Length: 206
Image (cartoon, rainbow, N blue to C red; front, top):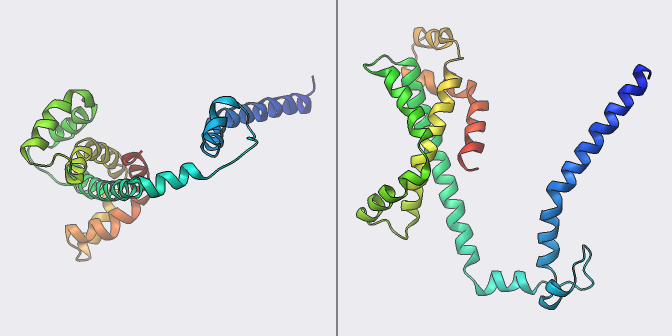
């Protein structure tokens, strides 16, 4: 087999694999959409990818007769606030661990890892007791606090790994030019760390 023919075969196999994976991924989503626009009688009677009848009654019911929009507002608020707080707290904590000298700094970094590795199921009962004692049951603030216990360690550990790879000379030059620690963080470290912040943002509200 010639080299060009082998390359063509590999390309065909690669393309076929990508197509199979794409169909495998999109098909369940397509089936959900198709089912949502079928009348109730056809949902169980007609197993077809192209329904003979379509309706928007299900969407109208959800939007007009259920508090769906209120739930969406709560989800958006919780996501935005939790993501913002996790990124801010994680960035500040990671910067302190990487750049500042204080007693027990290595142990703090290890504690962040250990906290992140604790299974969430072990925290359900103590977290419920804390949220209940604070009067935050059935409150989006309690939900935000719960999410932050899992997202802050993740954000901190991700930013620690990134800040360790940023040359300290860049920050030292800013400090020599008259910047404070906060200014050096805001003007030097954060702009450089924007790719890491994007990854943290995606990982926090996954």
